[in-house]
Image 1: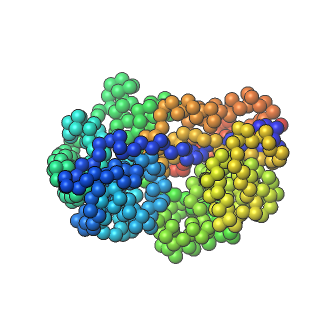
Image 2: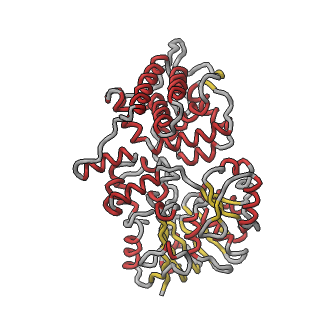
Image 3: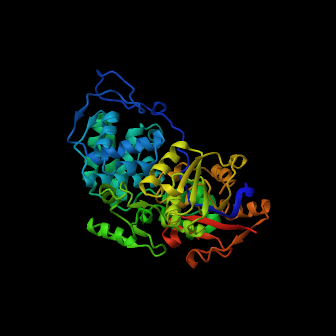
Length: 505
């Protein structure tokens, strides 16, 4: 590939979305049993459920019903938690449709408060899954936990999370989740939820939750940390090795916090950050100005309001983490340049680079996924940068064989583990295995095997390239001793990312 790269090669890792996990049907789990024996069984959609008369149930808490179904779709249907959250905001009918198809009844319509609670509960329950499951299995027989029906387990996880982590009024949580279990499953399931949740409330009040102690050898401590901070054991051991125990704990604490989001004003459509500030002020959405990028603002809450107001749909701004924006700063797109963006979908950096070309030059957005590229093309038109964006559906491994163009710069945003975005991607920690790291290090997060080691391997194969320090392009706090760009969640309060600027000599 080197012969088609005219000047620059940028290697970066910003945790692009990996392919979804293989779908595991609920047919492989226990079918939900119902209390009405006269209703025949029927499989409908992707979930195994028994057919019930569809009806409105005003007694069941809507946000808990939706949360339970969402959690089922994520864990057993292979859906992405963050995509469900994005689609769910402002689409209560869509959410209730899933409840009706899965559980056989509807609740009252969702309000904005319900949607916010759903996002909090689903994200938090997924993040704290190992911790919650440890408590659940401790309060019921291990055999009961291992054979528990999927829906019953999700209801218990929701109840445990609300009591232990959200500090909601405990007996209200008990009553609401018991009611959901009785209506969605059967009276006996409700009785079980009642007994287990009341036992949890008592232990919490006595400050005697059955949690592991941080003692013993390294392996034992890693297992305890994995439970206390709800991460896979292999991940804990890996970070402890590279970062030390104290820093590993800080990173896990960061991963378990509610994520913040950044908005980028779309300069391609003539929108400045001042214009975006005016819009956010009119919507009464709190925000902070980015300390690192002139086009960005950061917000902790209010994304749902931004979506409902149409700011994203109208192309006035885009949701993009500052860590990704800083990688574009490393590329330093200039008007008139031809830039190849490899593995371009979903296109965030493509569009930002295009907006900085000021209508002169070209971005070749290459990706193997035709459907995702179509979205890039449509969004480029929405952002009014389509005149400088060309989409190319191709496998990068064979693309040089037919390519005749030369480019001034190449951005290679290689697939990676995503370990730098676990705060935003709550489900990702459970979809990764230690073996994935070995496979992914052959491409390019915060892990040295995915970053510096890959750059070193590339330079051994391509001695015609040299490292150029990124110090001219990003704040000094992001520049490593080797001249690479690196953002770290705990240090910078951004997603973890990495980039190297390599120049052909």
